[in-house]
Structures are given as structure tokens and as C-alpha cells.
Amino acid sequence: MVIFMLQATPIRIQFSTACKLLDVTRESLRHTIRRDPSFPRPIKQGTSKQAPVFFDYQELVEWHNSKKEAAAAQLEA
Image (cartoon, rainbow, N blue to C red):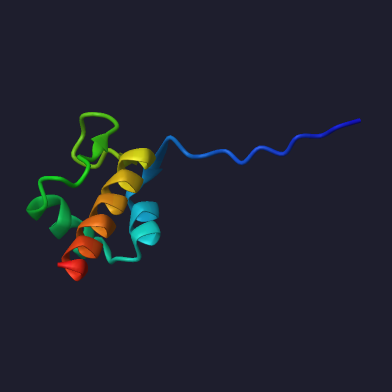
């Protein structure tokens, strides 16, 4: 019998999880959202002011990788 173990990649993550993933405070993440137009836009679930906010996991990873590449290019220049 063969058992396959698959690691699930999240589709969306909560605001607090995004903070942990990027190792930043909530205020720092809010600042990044406001100031960096390349940062993925949050997805609000619902219409109320207190509705939960999520981010697309893949978009966060792609944003992070683009920032790493830009930093590496600056070091090489």
C-alpha cells in the first residue's frame, strides 16, 4: 500500500498570518499596504467595517520574491 503525503499550500491567509509570514508588525504591514503599490491588495470578506481581511498567498510569495530580486540586483550594481 502506498500513501502519498501532500502538503497543502494555502490559497488565502489572514492578516495576522501575513504578518507572521513576513515577520512584520500589524502596523508595518498596514504601512506597506498604503505605501507600496506593488504589494498585493487585501481581500475583504464582507461589507462591514470589521469584516475579516485576507491576502492571496501566491501573490504575497511573488511580491516577496520580486523584492528579493530587486535587492540582489542593487547589491550587484
